[in-house]
Image (cartoon, rainbow, N blue to C red; front, side, top):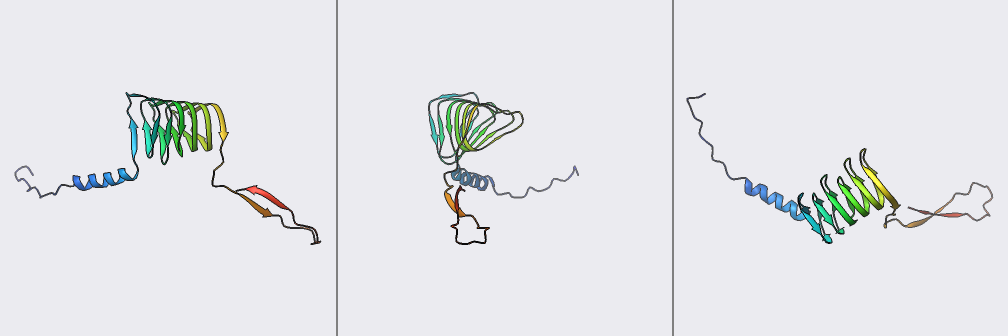
Length: 161
């Protein structure tokens, strides 16, 4: 056990292969990070995800991705994205398809979303406005005639899907 030393097998570097995989995934979904000790003043427009660990004073707009306000993060302004996840503090307006307020999250302001969830411990102070999905369209559904007399016109009802 202590007397013999085993020969070290020749090992090819694997780090290059791992780095290539990480770079391919990073290009598919970019993530912008505002660090914990930083303060950013101004508007932010990004196409991928954004994580806020520090403080942002301004509006954040994300085209395809999510805004994540982390536990230490704070935002004062308007947030607009397909998905917003709040685990820090937000003072302002959130416009999203889905809005999630997590255990440590706090939203003070206006929520404009089609789907909203608040975990136990999360706080929401303000106004909530439900926004319908843009993909839904009106359709006409006929009501079946229960009368035997078929000479009456069938009524139709408009519903939204």
